Image (cartoon, rainbow, N blue to C red; front, top):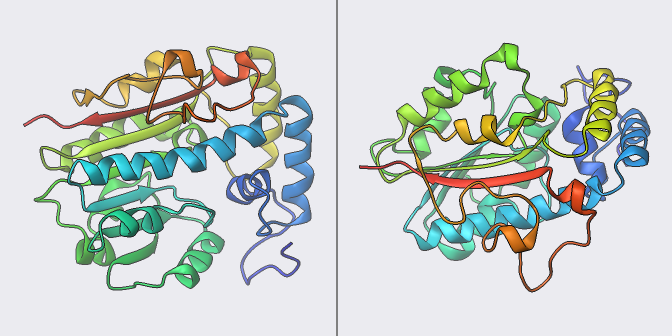
Length: 273
């Protein structure tokens, strides 16, 4: 466990990225993160399985997009490094892939840069993903990503930490606009259609953290894709019988409460020509 905070980091304020790391069984977290995460787990114990499933989902999504010929990945709100990072999955399938991680958390940025073994193909950018122009025009992004060619834009377990007042529909639309035809947008997002009491209590807990917890109904999550064409099975929940690959692994479906499973949405959209 992290015991000494980097300069400028308040270890007494729970951090959503470090809580996510704790749910995954990681060590990049402080006592305040662990304490609030345990409060969340008492209300929603399956969140640990949900975060693990999301990490596995990232690897399957990246492989699928590599199979479609994608070689460029922009991962927004990337969070702390964990198992099956985007660049590891991408470079395993496409040796010349380019990957840029974006996160505004200085701890995430520091750990991300320390992880990178291929700086000519992978970059960690400390920037606010809610400000598309800041990201799209960042020198490190421009050095690796050619927006004249198809790009995979990943927003995995990110948008439900963005409140409505930050206009997530608006800034996601700006990213979609910047992408070339044939690009993909992949989103995983906690929904609010199921388990309303647990959602309310977890949202209350996150008021103590550095980011809010903002689950949304499926219709609002679907709107993030705009006019992108959703690939089958469309915007799907975490229930295997309703979804199918790549959103779950049919060989090892998650052991998770059905109502909680319905909270997890995932989808991949393709920008038409």
